[in-house]
Length: 160
Image 1 (cartoon, rainbow, N blue to C red):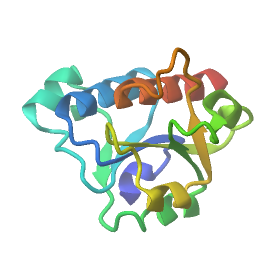
Image 2 (cartoon, helix red, strand yellow):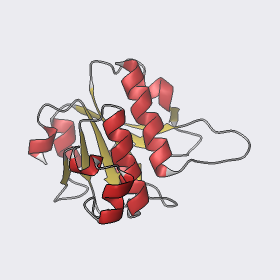
Image 3 (cartoon, helix red, strand yellow):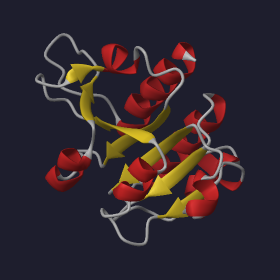
Image 4 (tube, rainbow, N blue to C red):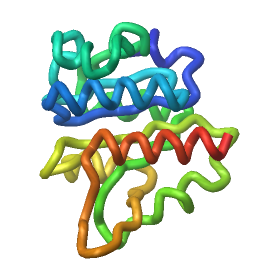
């Protein structure tokens, strides 16, 4: 994990993302939107599984990744390395993604996303610096995890 974090400014941190298509999409989004590395917490699928690599259009082989061996305690290593931990959630009490990213252009950022359905565990949510949401309309509570991650990556890239 230390090796993939070296020199990284933006990382994606995944917990429980066990669907190979979502995983592949996250890698493709990460590559296209300037994410430096992907860190896997507990319960994630194998990024080198054939389906994940295919959906990622090969980017699972190009974007550096590592498993966090002591999940979720390894979130402390991200914090020690200067990363601001942004936990994605559909909770209406969370800060909007745009507002949370505002002013972080010079900072290191870790975008935390969880599995479809349950999302991030409460332990990971408590360990984050800020909980962020994507404002939704028409009674929809959330987006697919890969889509939500892409919006977070875009918002990060847009802000510098």
